[in-house]
Length: 374
Image (cartoon, rainbow, N blue to C red; front, side):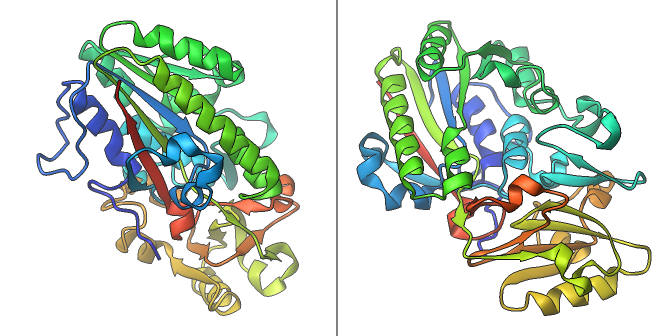
């Protein structure tokens, strides 16, 4: 188990370091924080969905530019999944503080699961982004300090609930193609005291469908490498480009359909999370039985613990806010090696994946932090 390096070595520590590099003091940032960046007039953060540090090191030939850069390694946080990492980057908080504790989470007291990526509830119900994630974002704090935060990403994401939850305070610069994203970044960096984040998600999509290391994935890695090189070419004097990711990935070598194993579903009310980080919500009084059944079934294949043990072990950070506790499953099941715990009737597309992420293996937790300065 690679426990996330909260307190200096995780994605949650990067936003404060970026703001500090721009001269914006972070009140909650300890002076001895291990993650420090050199001062810059402006910064660009290139966020590549699914670009695990271990994955990048395995294929330097497909990414010669990125592989030539001096690299540091951060950990994503738990679970190692997009919504959790984006919120850590958007707030500078650990998952236990910001509350985005997984892909699909129980809404306490409702009997429903909430998909934090698609921002959807059963029956067309809605969720207020500021209610689900009420913390002030780093972009709001940056703007208050005179920094100009911008976010460059596809137009389809502009008004989603997830964007409103984690990117409040940014100027959204919609750009669908690689060329357009590069152009928008360079335009934004010409403004004084800029903080620009640019997102690319197709590498993660290729990994899910065909597996990391596949021809399709390697093609997307080459696209990412070229994009990073072109972003670097247009950096103005005094600025800095940082490349990182939200998580890595593993390819599944075994899938267990939990819905088809009666002993796994007995006493289970809701099956949330995702295939590599399952939140199991139990019927009243059934938590102990469910914990024992899941632990026995996945012995030697997954870490299976109670909610309290996951919290006490620091999986979600040093502290979990009391109001977020019931978002965590009564039982948390986290596969290692190549196991994916699927639930096709609930998550049909996920069950078809080749590549998965969410767990606390090095391949999923380790993400690069690469730096370029003109």
